[in-house]
Length: 119
Image (cartoon, rainbow, N blue to C red; front, side, top):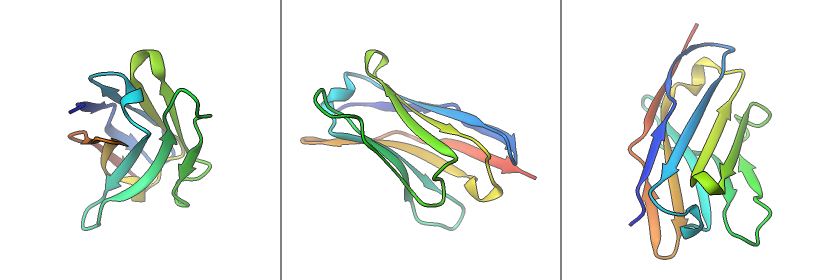
Protein backbone atom coordinates (compact mmCIF):
# COMPACT_ATOMS: atom_id res chain seq x y z
CA UNK A 1 0.00 0.00 0.00
CA UNK A 2 1.06 3.58 -0.58
CA UNK A 3 0.68 5.91 2.37
CA UNK A 4 -0.54 9.45 1.86
CA UNK A 5 0.02 12.22 4.40
CA UNK A 6 -1.77 15.55 4.14
CA UNK A 7 -0.62 18.80 5.69
CA UNK A 8 -1.29 22.50 5.44
CA UNK A 9 -4.73 22.79 6.95
CA UNK A 10 -5.61 25.37 9.53
CA UNK A 11 -7.75 28.35 10.42
CA UNK A 12 -8.08 31.13 7.86
CA UNK A 13 -10.35 34.10 7.38
CA UNK A 14 -12.80 34.23 4.53
CA UNK A 15 -11.08 35.52 1.43
CA UNK A 16 -7.75 34.08 2.49
CA UNK A 17 -5.62 31.32 1.04
CA UNK A 18 -4.14 28.00 2.09
CA UNK A 19 -2.03 25.43 0.32
CA UNK A 20 -2.55 21.78 1.17
CA UNK A 21 0.11 19.16 0.51
CA UNK A 22 -0.24 15.42 0.05
CA UNK A 23 3.02 13.49 0.32
CA UNK A 24 3.14 9.91 -0.91
CA UNK A 25 5.38 7.26 0.64
CA UNK A 26 6.55 6.21 -2.81
CA UNK A 27 6.37 7.47 -6.35
CA UNK A 28 3.06 9.06 -7.26
CA UNK A 29 3.34 7.15 -10.54
CA UNK A 30 1.99 4.27 -8.47
CA UNK A 31 -1.36 5.94 -9.15
CA UNK A 32 -3.32 6.84 -12.28
CA UNK A 33 -5.23 9.64 -10.61
CA UNK A 34 -4.80 11.65 -7.43
CA UNK A 35 -7.44 13.85 -5.96
CA UNK A 36 -8.59 15.98 -3.09
CA UNK A 37 -11.88 15.29 -1.39
CA UNK A 38 -13.56 17.05 1.48
CA UNK A 39 -16.20 16.34 4.07
CA UNK A 40 -17.90 19.23 5.74
CA UNK A 41 -20.03 19.09 8.90
CA UNK A 42 -23.07 16.96 8.23
CA UNK A 43 -22.10 16.40 4.62
CA UNK A 44 -20.96 13.46 2.57
CA UNK A 45 -17.42 13.30 1.30
CA UNK A 46 -17.18 14.99 -2.08
CA UNK A 47 -14.59 15.31 -4.80
CA UNK A 48 -12.95 18.73 -4.93
CA UNK A 49 -10.26 18.32 -7.57
CA UNK A 50 -8.27 15.62 -9.28
CA UNK A 51 -5.26 15.35 -11.52
CA UNK A 52 -4.13 12.61 -13.83
CA UNK A 53 -0.86 10.96 -12.95
CA UNK A 54 1.36 9.14 -15.36
CA UNK A 55 4.52 9.62 -17.29
CA UNK A 56 2.69 9.99 -20.59
CA UNK A 57 -0.27 12.05 -19.40
CA UNK A 58 -0.56 15.80 -19.63
CA UNK A 59 -1.66 16.15 -16.04
CA UNK A 60 -5.24 16.96 -16.95
CA UNK A 61 -7.33 18.29 -14.10
CA UNK A 62 -10.95 18.30 -13.01
CA UNK A 63 -12.65 20.54 -10.47
CA UNK A 64 -15.95 20.62 -8.68
CA UNK A 65 -18.06 23.54 -9.86
CA UNK A 66 -18.00 25.04 -6.37
CA UNK A 67 -14.21 25.55 -6.45
CA UNK A 68 -13.54 26.32 -10.12
CA UNK A 69 -11.47 29.45 -10.51
CA UNK A 70 -10.48 29.44 -6.83
CA UNK A 71 -8.65 26.14 -6.27
CA UNK A 72 -5.74 24.70 -8.23
CA UNK A 73 -4.43 21.16 -8.03
CA UNK A 74 -0.85 20.46 -9.05
CA UNK A 75 1.81 17.81 -8.67
CA UNK A 76 5.54 17.65 -8.09
CA UNK A 77 6.74 14.32 -9.40
CA UNK A 78 10.21 14.65 -7.89
CA UNK A 79 8.77 15.26 -4.42
CA UNK A 80 6.01 12.65 -4.77
CA UNK A 81 3.60 15.36 -3.68
CA UNK A 82 0.28 16.73 -4.86
CA UNK A 83 -0.87 20.19 -3.82
CA UNK A 84 -4.16 22.00 -3.56
CA UNK A 85 -3.85 25.77 -3.67
CA UNK A 86 -7.02 27.29 -2.25
CA UNK A 87 -7.70 30.99 -2.81
CA UNK A 88 -10.67 33.21 -2.02
CA UNK A 89 -11.79 30.80 0.66
CA UNK A 90 -15.42 30.86 1.72
CA UNK A 91 -17.15 29.77 4.90
CA UNK A 92 -18.58 26.80 3.04
CA UNK A 93 -15.09 25.52 2.27
CA UNK A 94 -14.78 24.52 5.92
CA UNK A 95 -14.18 20.77 5.96
CA UNK A 96 -11.71 17.99 6.50
CA UNK A 97 -9.74 17.61 3.28
CA UNK A 98 -8.54 14.18 2.22
CA UNK A 99 -6.04 13.14 -0.39
CA UNK A 100 -6.69 10.03 -2.46
CA UNK A 101 -4.67 8.08 -4.96
CA UNK A 102 -6.15 5.43 -7.25
CA UNK A 103 -4.61 3.06 -9.74
CA UNK A 104 -4.60 -0.71 -9.76
CA UNK A 105 -3.96 -2.21 -7.30
CA UNK A 106 -3.92 0.88 -5.09
CA UNK A 107 -6.72 2.90 -3.54
CA UNK A 108 -5.09 4.99 -0.85
CA UNK A 109 -6.54 7.67 1.41
CA UNK A 110 -4.75 10.06 3.71
CA UNK A 111 -5.86 10.76 7.26
CA UNK A 112 -7.21 14.21 6.41
CA UNK A 113 -6.34 17.77 7.30
CA UNK A 114 -8.86 20.20 8.73
CA UNK A 115 -9.59 23.53 7.10
CA UNK A 116 -11.67 26.06 8.99
CA UNK A 117 -12.74 29.30 7.33
CA UNK A 118 -13.93 32.02 9.68
CA UNK A 119 -15.83 35.22 9.01
